[in-house]
Image (tube, rainbow, N blue to C red):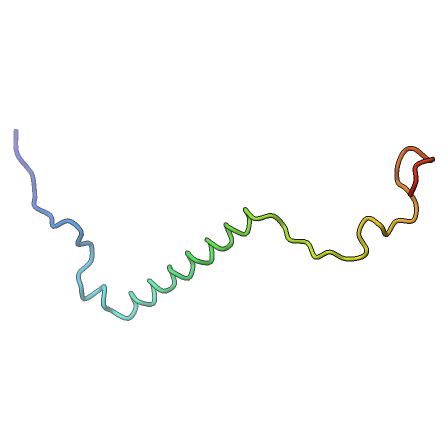
Length: 73
């Protein structure tokens, strides 16, 4: 059996010159802002809806909508 192990340094994906370039900094900033935006949107879906109370709630009807015509309004 042939032993084809090649020593690859782990943890090094890109050279340092790429990581320190301007376009990579712009890309990293875009990804960071996008991640925070989706985090906020995801958390807002989990929270209950906040409704502003108004005086025109259930009390605005002058007649009942019940099946029972003798029910109080």
